Length: 556
Image 1 (cartoon, rainbow, N blue to C red):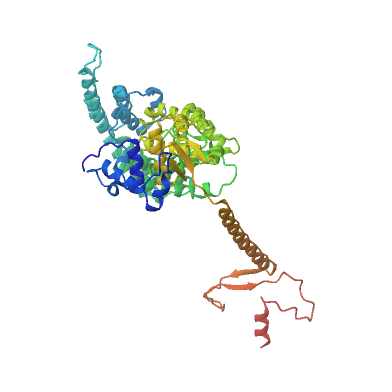
Image 2: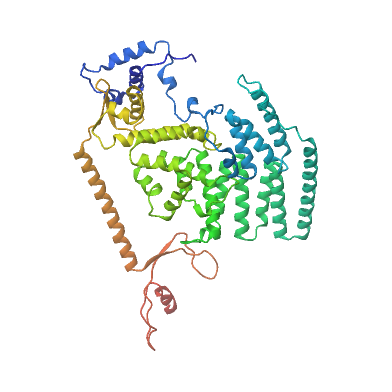
């Protein structure tokens, strides 16, 4: 595919018109003061501008499938404002090492420092392979730093030597511990004690995780399921599997085990106020589910999951920190929530979940201010603050692939909300409000109109955006008819329910077993009379639908 010539703003508008469906081409642009906008002239201009370029139908693809929208994995961040030591202290275990490695891969200014910190942390584990890999990267990074044109002579930047003694000793210790745990597990199985077998599988899974063998760790944690004797054991098993599945980025597995944990009686049967331990478990489950939904690009579901996390019980450093909950939940909410949802869920104090998320936002004042600016329709300052924190977001291993998509959705939502109360809007003033040029704004609005997100038309000559004329009379009649039909349906349902309750009718499914009872292949409607006083002596009593059949058979 050869490169197309870079189009101008007018060419972009014409291209959008050319690519639009036939029914919408004539309504996209309004006639300007200079004369009517001719469709045939537009097509001719488009042909001249794009002569020899790729046909529009060849590049008109689904945005989710467009390779240009795929996350860039080779980007570089040059100006981060990240406190690396404080950032690393928010995590533990393998998550701390993986996040530091991710920063080292994408941020040259912090590469050496991040690798040194990761090297010191990995020496507290049995993960020898990762230690050797990090040491190799650190050696390469220090050599590049020393060979840089602006390198300071005798700066003292030297990689630590490879600790071969530690490598050999750690491998022996890991092997000895593995043999011991395996022997203990065999003994437990010989004694047939379920609790001991479950703990043995968990200990073995912990050891494999400490060695960096995620596949075997997942197998051991999963095998513990057969030996769980209480709901608490099942929840612990699910949390272990969820943790390893997040490391493996097996997101369907994460959601599956979150659902299993939430369906246990200890979680599902509790209503209202929950104890501290249950709240801590639920927060871990919601955070894991939010990560999985974020990875699946279901941003609204991810935002709802993060909003349900409890600030007082958010202690899950193996996966994410409270600051991550604030950033992930805040950005996903901005990208997907409408104005009412944003006010109700992120900036109000009406419910416990909202007030808890406000506590998360206090950890990230910049995200909190962005949400408030967006809600107050101060879009220029909101988008400016988003750009200021973009570099730090690109160093987050779970959020980085979604930054561009989230930013685009937030900007589009801001454009939609800005225009929603107006019949017409001056695009020059609109461009000033969004800190952009009129030509760039026109391209954005054209795309939103073609996608059906804004119901408007563009006067390209006068630079005015007009809302489409809607027949309010016919729209009101349609709504009235729909409301009338809905009211009629509900009224009939209420009358039917009242009649059923008045006659005490219930659905009874006949059993097909033995004992002389009659088998019914379909539900049987039975009218049950209210309980009556015992019949007087010598009286046969009243016949009811429930006992008439038995009385008739007796008389016969």
